[in-house]
Length: 223
Image (cartoon, rainbow, N blue to C red):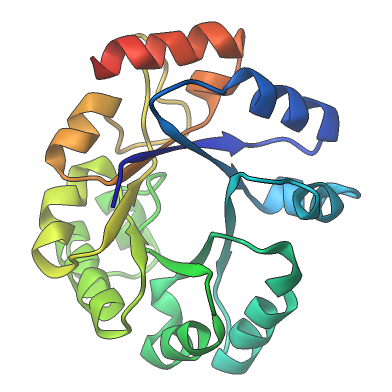
């Protein structure tokens, strides 16, 4: 498991996506590209991804449905030759196992509790357990389902590592001086890797402004 950096392509523009990919190439780091709902639901998004060559492709759809629908969705995506695909761990053990069964070479990534939520948010939607307890249960479920990777906030990496021994992908990463935006549980790149993340995800810290300069800032922070 070599450390990776995923750049979030949060746009519906092919032109912008192509520009981000071109400008974010750096030596000595494994760079992947994360495409979410915005890009996949754009007019040409799926076609764009299908034509990418020699790239680590992370499709962040956060599938969360009944087992048959989730496994059928994974099968329907196979022509894209995806490296990583996200599903919500909260979809349940049966759904996770069904997805893993049909995933082939695609790594199935279980999403724990979104980094945009905190304990107060969880309480407001009916959760009585603490955020820590919920993430612990999710990590155990991901391990039981034999998922390939897990997504968790940088604040829970050490906790998740106790129960999940495969890849840990960490969003909510901000470079020095950047605003947290709509994320509530964030940290810096070096700290995430130090805590045990195998991969980090950066979006606006890289893609807003000069991408090449932002990548250089990232390199400096990781030294």
